[in-house]
Length: 79
Image (cartoon, rainbow, N blue to C red; front, side):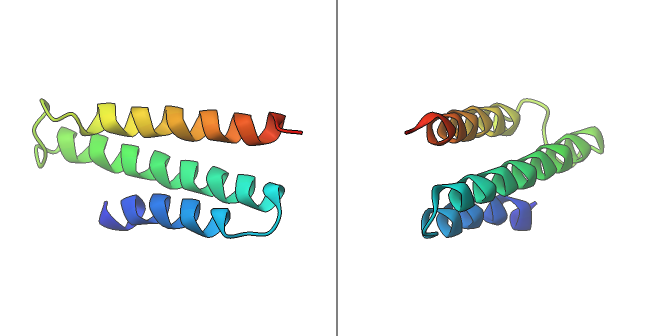
């Protein structure tokens, strides 16, 4: 779970340092994949009883996903 969470931030950072917008967008998509991986791992951890069901982690993950989607859309639609 730590690796997936770090991967999200790392891919956003690496993409932002790229020269071309399309490269940045590609890294944002990779970050979304890592976020989906984290979401799956959290769901499994909750199902196995390792994480309390009342945690807000899933809501936080959804919020980050919405932010990433909005950023990707804004970059795709930018002139």
